[in-house]
Length: 75
Image (cartoon, rainbow, N blue to C red; front, side):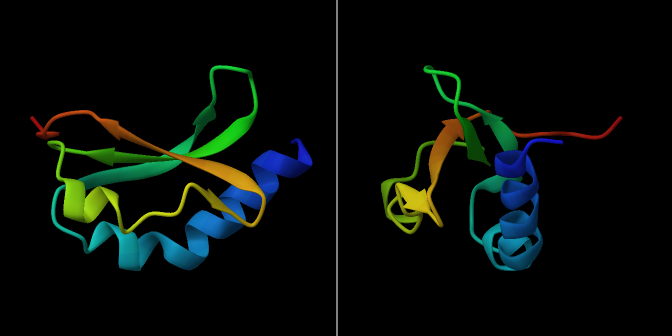
């Protein structure tokens, strides 16, 4: 496991409860930026500027990307 992926997973463990408690946030995970760097991915059901603005552009040196995924429904 790369050090950046390990770092991302540690950050998620620290913030997941808080972030998942925010309105419209449907998931938190890791991903890759367009240029291939490891990033934190915040999935939101719909674009909500006030909630989106709560997330930093970067945390502990890793980029944070907010992606609009829509609602997730378990079958």
